[in-house]
Amino acid sequence: MAAAVAGLESSVVAKSVEELSASAGSPPEKYILKDGIGGTNFPLMDVAVIDVALLTSSSPEGEREVEKLGLALSDCGYIQAVNHGIEESFLDEVHAMIKQFFSLPKEEKMKCARQKDDLDGYGNDSVYSDKQILDWNDRLYLMVKPEYQRKLKVWPQNPANFREVLVDLTSKLEKIDEVMLKAMARYLKLEDEECFAKQYGENPTALSRFNYYPPCRRPDAVLAAKAHADGSAMTYLLQDRIVEGLQTLKDGQWYKVPIVPNAIVVNVGDQMEIMSNGIFKSPTHRVVTNPEKERMTLGIFFGPDATTEIGVVEELVDEKRPRLYKSVVDYPRNTFPFIQLGKKPIDLVRL
Ligand code: OGA
Ligand code: NI
Image 1: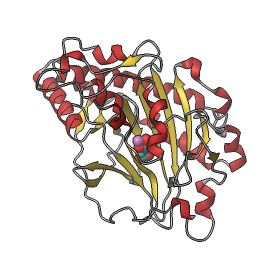
Image 2: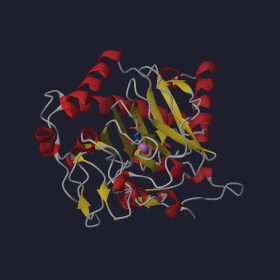
Image 3: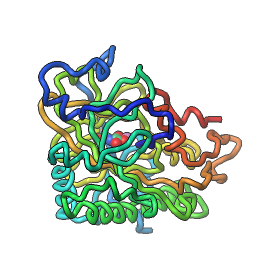
Image 4: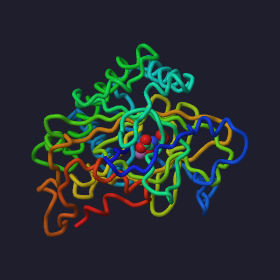
């Protein structure tokens, strides 16, 4: 996830990746990784499948599910959420809406174009340096919450149900996030199960990112999304239902994150790693390209109020586990350019 930083962006990329993909020949130089993506066959990550409904239960089964959740988030940082209460028919509607938007003619999509130094809107990588390797990805960023930060002028009018569906999805995921935060506090045996939710503050943020990854002739040397960790507290991803691409790094090895039908992929973001004093891991992940097929995903990033300082939960600091991170304010906005430049933002706030 990301936020642009005022005044730092050097230019806006003119051509969409969709156009590059449609034109003959190899991708332009600035998309090519000199050393390639490091392999062709990647093992599958065994991502824990978590029954969200069980997380609120105090039965032994509920306890076990909370334990399984906590272990997975402290290990690879990813889970697949099932039995989450979002109807399959609603997910169908969301997937159809994503496809409808990206299938519009360019002129229509450009009505939502992102302006230089802005975050919200349709476009591609913010460019901060000539040396930056670009991602094979067109995207639409829209801040959904707090409501007063919605930049409705770049919200699609087409498809007609876009706005309603996005707002509806965000509130459904927000409810799941509340359950997750409580279960995570329970796993850590924290006195206050609301302690993470409280750090979200009065006006928590929800940022949406619609991703379109066109086919690419150089899957060996071009990434659809460069390696990064999310600046959120928690990320909820609706993966493409057919085409894989997401990979996560563990002990120096890239693993594929599998597609589980109708599951929501959930991962820890840097701000949760900070709040949990490093117990929950914000995974480094990336997206690889596909030589034939397009791929579409939607990520919703939840995090604290951009004006509130957040930090390590005091109960998680002791002699054996000293405080690992400084407190931060508006973390995604303050750290984003570092991702594009290939640095790891969380290292900047490590003590
Ligand atoms: C992101 C991201 C993964 C995907 O948008 O931050 O990691 O599979 N997306 O699209
Ligand atoms: Ni990400």
